[in-house]
Length: 148
Picture 1: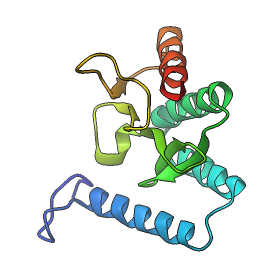
Picture 2 (picture 1 turned 90 degrees about the horizontal axis):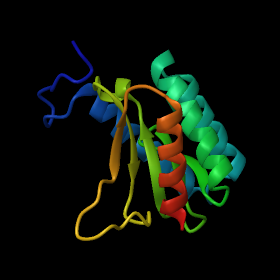
Picture 3 (picture 1 turned 60 degrees about the vertical axis):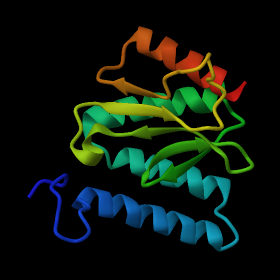
Picture 4 (picture 1 turned 120 degrees about the vertical axis):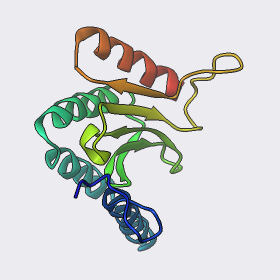
């Protein structure tokens, strides 16, 4: 059975239930007086390390670029995937591996706290199928804009 296959238990797939369980564990750990910055970064590195090669290569580049270009953002996991938040806890961006839900592509997404506003409508999730110099340049620009 594919991880994206729906089951009879509430209509959630195995992958969706696993993501919700990961998020519950993250919240539980944060509730215990919060996780330390080093613990959160280690959790992100472990999540990246568990990804298939194609997803891991993209996630490693995103992690390096976010930490270099927006050092004020704190790495943490979000639904078991790498994410980056302001010190006040507001999530700015996240990475979702293609393998997470048997997707066609990995995604770099931005949450409401990201300053990407551009008129009455703008994109907040970007598909990444391959890492290129152009992709790197775009990701750097997006991250810098998001934290501005």
